Length: 249
Image (cartoon, rainbow, N blue to C red):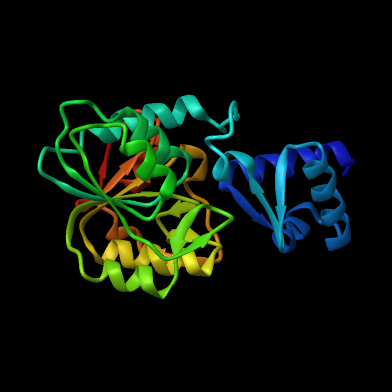
């Protein structure tokens, strides 16, 4: 495979999943770890990605406030945000994580909405603070610098004290067979705690992440109550996700 082709595939994986591991890219591309490391170094030097220990992350994931910054599938994420607004009601208590899709939601909150948001994301909290009718609480702990999210035992412990109406989760990967999965152990533990603290669970994801799987399970498919994508709810690609427990929005 030519270097240009490898770089294109690497960028797609990073844009799609926000973070990739060098080992996984080595298997996907059928090249050595050293080749992957050189590719990541070149892409980082070109300003396209941020290289981190054991892999790389999307620039849009960690730097949404640094001037102009391209967000992968931004139009689709804005459409998802618009749909998700329909789940939010006055007086609700809503728990969110972070990521570019949920940041689009935070920007789109209508001025009439009067509810309380809890979040593990400083970026989400700051963006929500622009809406005068919202009460905002941050769940604090160690800052994961690769995602700008609070993680760790203190976050999990704080979350155990809440029972919120609805949680809003982004997705690294979501499938009927394997449920919601991710590659970051600390984030998985926090997301599990978020789900335990919530009466209802909504997953917001672009359709490209459906029917994909990562290394660590967060929850089973049947623990999710709402799936929100940019697709029309009757799209054939969503047929497998419809059941009595899950509403496709």
